[in-house]
Image (cartoon, rainbow, N blue to C red; front, side, top):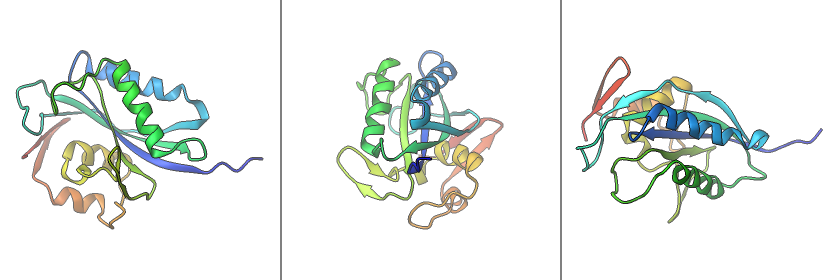
Length: 173
């Protein structure tokens, strides 16, 4: 029996163009085509979140977080990010307005315990601890998650200003 090295990866998915729920489901379907190389372990519920950043005049987002087990002998974090970017483009994402509306956004939140800063990819995601639309669904599927710097998911949530009502998240930006 072959011993395959794997890594646990958390990915944040978001959409606010077209049919957001279908867009998120289609992204999962495309990831599942990689079979044993990328295995879906958990999916959070979907949360409706107000736009953050400078572009406020756009539809609310649908966000969720997924947990993946990835074959680390085949995939690097950069290679996986390239695949995520390709899936975004296949679903119609054009990077015309930073922070603007998009049919799909896929962000790698963490790749095991890797800590790195690069031009193409920074791990863990540099703004993950500031975003309720990442932290709330992440806590749902990984309540004991700890960032590489030792910050727990609960500590990160306690440090930001947000409120929830049912499946909706409001956050001060």
